[in-house]
Length: 135
Image (cartoon, rainbow, N blue to C red; front, top):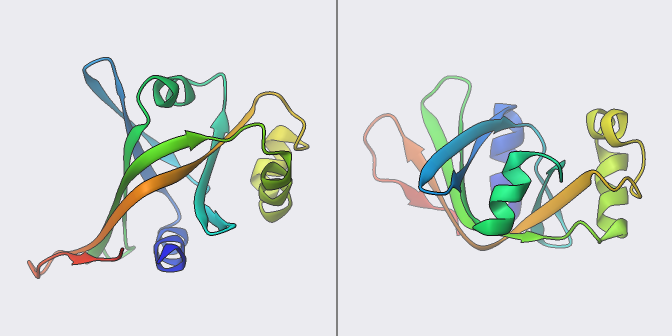
């Protein structure tokens, strides 16, 4: 389940994560997703609005399109903030040179991580074929 989501999104390169700020939707590009200990993990700075928005309202949705735009994935869930989990933060830093260049080490207090719970995911098609649940 999570592996299929991660593989599809990593192949896309960039995905977009939506949160809410009060009653307004906010969307921004993200680049890191991985499955660690059976959970979909994401990371960002705890100082960014996206992290603060997830603290207030954990509901989020992501979308990513294949390079040929024939398929896309939609994933929704609830963010579980897990920034005290040094072991997972260390795995993320070691798996991503970009993240390592930003945060340097797992003890960095600005380095925020979260995982998704109550995940629903669908593979959608430009052809009009009905979306396929991944979960």
